[in-house]
Image (cartoon, rainbow, N blue to C red; front, side, top):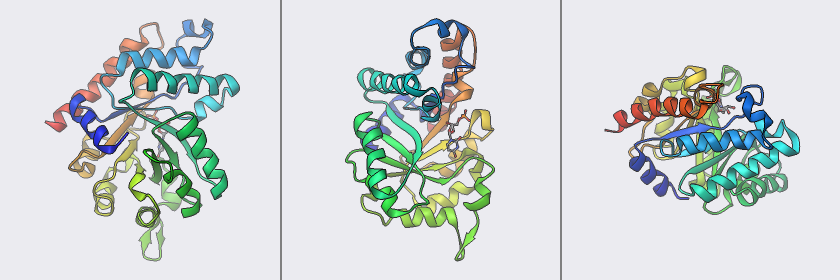
Length: 270
Ligand SMILES: O=c1ccn([C@@H]2O[C@H](COP(=O)(O)O)[C@@H](O)[C@H]2O)c(=O)[nH]1
């Protein structure tokens, strides 16, 4: 998928919502636990109920890895379902990988080629040779952690390093890497006041923005400071949507929550 296709989808759906598929077996409705593949059945129901309101889905791989082989198979079934039924929807493997070059190349193969996600999240701190193997995969995107939504972001990311905050250095340096046009960045919605500065460095790149909903970030504040000419934002909500109900009506309730955010986005885009 290209960023132009993503932008077209955003304007067609009047949405720049990304729904996080973070499946916790302790939180999903009980009746699903009796099915052969509860994780996939849950995801399928959420996808069927929300696909017209969202432009992206983001399974966080931790929630699949935690269930061993069954979890990994459910992840594979979920991405295959999305790619077959909704190929226009942007998919993100939120895996936060990154290692020495030959290992990163294996991660890139696993998530971008074998599982065929459109993108994968990558930690930047091992530097250029740890990220370029992801960037080398054609027509795919590497979403680099820039300024994360958690409190611990202030431990290192905002610290001054040679006269500049570390997250700014990360973004600036990453622009010099090979195939940097395939970069997007994670910036937390809980850090809305930082978006203006970030846009000075990357005026056009897409930013994946987790932290609205359960973490309390503000959609309108992020949009005010972070929206680019082509929107350039993918706003993620996971728990706030997928766990809106723990009853059999969970798909309808998830849709209601997604619709609330989509309507706010439509208003902002108008
Ligand atoms: O800075 C970051 C980077 C990633 N995440 C992930 O996004 C979702 C957020 O879930 P909510 O339930 O909407 O809070 C989750 O998968 C995180 O691991 C993040 O929150 N912040």
